Length: 523
Image 1 (cartoon, rainbow, N blue to C red):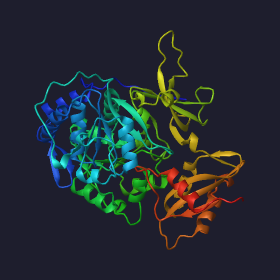
Image 2: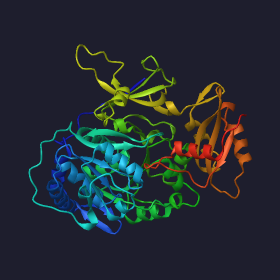
Image 3: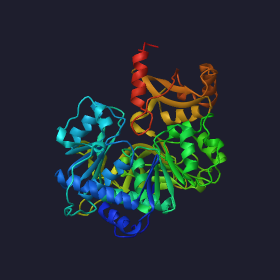
Image 4: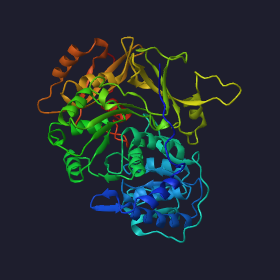
């Protein structure tokens, strides 16, 4: 099944973020660009700060293509560092500020970073840094500078960023995004969300996460205001939504689950200016979608799907949410999504298959990993080149199906599928059902081997009310709501579940913790 929406190219002459920068220098003036706690900065002030840091990067010899690692919390300083890096032709590498020494140094070494921009507090939190001290700039201690020199020539196909994605095992991979990738995804998303300079967006997701970055860039593109929210406690988020009159917010399922909790004020408070919510990074539980529709009827809900390798992918229009609450919609404009079977042919409606992506958002591949790049970025199986170069598409590794009208439904990661009683089961399907019990606030399902032929399904749960929660009640609910091969054998109760740097449940860490605590014995 092919899902295809096309639009004309985005208006304007934006090919790289240098044109982007120049556009705001001319047009935005005194408009507030960023709010960071008690600090507010206009576009003109942002531009001045960027120019000051451009001189620092040039003084330190940063040249076109050099990787500049930005190890800062979401802040005005991290935004300045990003745009200054792009202006001198550098390649930005955001390093999530929650990472520890081992992960930070892996990224620095793997990216072959020429410079690390950080703060004294963050650099002190590391046991060591895999860069010479003269290549580490701590902004709170000041930095060298000089005169801004001419910048190198850049085009849209030039490398702009390397995003390191959290993998289920091992170290993350660096995904290479061009200026064209970023501008295309930014323009498309801002268009279908209807963003204007009047919008005030709240930033809750890391800039090292592709959608957290996209929120920053969409706000900047339209000349809106981005509110950087540090505290993720529901009460603090709600206070900011009211105080700053936020119009749009994005989150991942775990964040929405926290906001939907009975002790959270989010569903009990009216936010007059809030006009949309977007979800990505996993399927939002249907019961939470319904709860938000009831508590915030004037806010449009966009259920989305994205793959970092393709930057942005699909969204469900708000007018379809009540009818198709488990769908992620159709391809975003100027993108084609195709569900294919094992033979590389389009799947029929209802037939599971792998989702592949084609379009302007397709990234440049994996940094220093040609083998994985060749495996994931492959020639389009549905197009035969006539003597020319084959078109490259992204093989997502995600299993999807479509309905008769072409709407997409996420089934699960192909490598995370659970084999139970000879059937392949998606952990997402198990989790979705258990969320509907209203007995738990968080749940992650995984399989552990019982023997060569059978798996044991384990669900790690965080009860909504620990005092009243009973495992037997959940087992009875599962018996009523699930076929036998879906039902968990073990309910493992937790106070909290670990997360990846992008705010998703860390499935591998959860499973590893379970195996350390409960060595398996034969059934």
